[in-house]
Length: 168
Image (tube, rainbow, N blue to C red; front, side, top):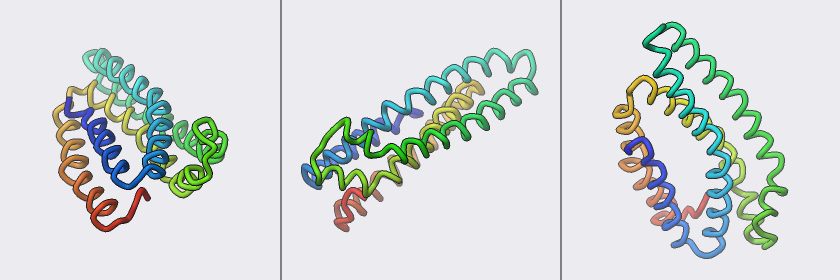
């Protein structure tokens, strides 16, 4: 459960965005929906990889290691390309959600960050699958929880709300 603590983090970010106003909340909602939909592929790939590593490691550690490295390398390339495509198609993607000029501008301001997050979640989904296959859920879960809940949320609150840094 700790491995999925990032979902709780994203839900709390919605509360923070709501405190910033309607336009920032709309921008955050669009970006969040895009990332949530596009992250299903890497999370599914990571789940499948975790199962495959778990069954392969008992037969051959080297083969399981090669599988993990290979899928991770291919995933970095594929999700990098998909992130660049998402960046290039920003106007098409955002126009599926709204035509409000203030929201469009807000999305444009943060879109490179959305695409970078898309890439990071792509890699994270695969790494989480590898950690699952190796039985390292506690390590991955604790690292995720500490990074997001102990450091991420207070820092985000401080930057966005206390220092009035806004959604960016």
